[in-house]
Image 1 (cartoon, helix red, strand yellow):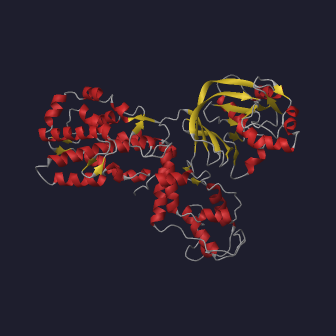
Image 2 (cartoon, rainbow, N blue to C red):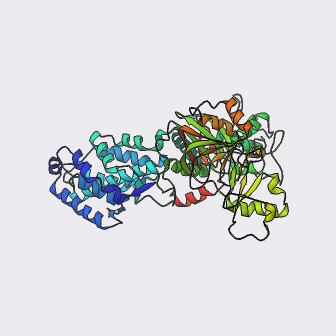
Image 3 (spheres, rainbow, N blue to C red):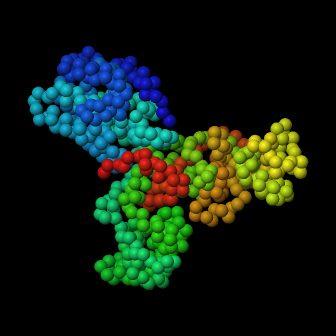
Length: 561
């Protein structure tokens, strides 16, 4: 995801000197005291990994060192010992970092504000304070920019981004451009994930759920007798509480003539309008849309708005791990949401349910490019699946392989008679492999969409369509099974020849394995989002099926509001 700062920084000095129209003039504009103090700080930055300025630790000391070297050690945020007005714009923007699920304190806001006020109170600023303020503002700008572009944490290790930044991001150059055009705030907007509609929708949702939490949250449903379900026609003291709760979540809109003081909203009867609201809530949380409040729905209703706000913060961080330009046309898979969609020009043009890996064989998060499609695929069974899952079935049922169209292939590519194998005395590493012939029983279905990757994960069909009826669809060995794979195949093959329904049907009928390369490869992003916003403002939440939220929650410091 990133490259070492030392490597990135080596290219800073020469380009930056070229950007200053007259370096000698810039140096002369700063008092010699300020310039020498900056030079002294830079020598310290070069010698230490951990550096503090005015009591605050710097995030990116090496980058700051190269930045100041490139401008002849002149300050960035003051001229002739007078702090520039752009500082107020920077601090105002950094104070709002919490709106993105980040922490203003990471960007030295409080300490910088103290120094700024002290400097402005006197006609003879202390050069030490001027330099401290300059260094803190520079580091705050660079750290905030880095976090907006690539996240606060590394997506692989969940370690704070203090030593690495995204490849190709020249923070020093960005800062020089922002200062020269007085476009500090604009530079953040251009770089952040906030240009993506999905990120903006989550950001809006974060403010809403924080507001709900600050007002005390929503009411808690009273306990019910074991096994009791609230459903249409139920009469219970819990019903008015449920109605009030669903009003707070935005799922229940009371009729215009409803008396919220004690009329219909205070009714003990679970009516048709409340059933609709419960279904809407269930749909937003990936629950079976029964319209009744059983244990699973009750558990989702019990999650406080504060916890939902934290869930949104975690998913905003995941958004920041994505590249800024996803492409004009791409495929997006949400593991936790059990969905795949095709997106063009920012609009979803196709969406469908998917099946993902089990908790034991999790689908990984990564991005790649779909380069070819295979019709009537055969399946080379991974050796661990063959040994752990298929061999025990063969031991109990010798006819299993033939019934499922599985063949035993030796290392020389020649098929082996299963009857010649002692299935009860196999070595640790199987000396042969299993391969399933194309057909209706094939585990990959009738088509697979390939993007070769180290995880051996791809999109394909399935001979078990009934599994798509389940709300939680974590059944695979890690690959992504599409509910309507032929539709996806047609989509990615759109400009790769005349692959209409008729031609695809002929190929499938022939039963021969055929590989079709894409003339225009399609990017694919496999993500893990447990919260996201929809164009109409609806906020969706899903269970943390792989417990990745729990791990990220421990690593990512809570945002500051």
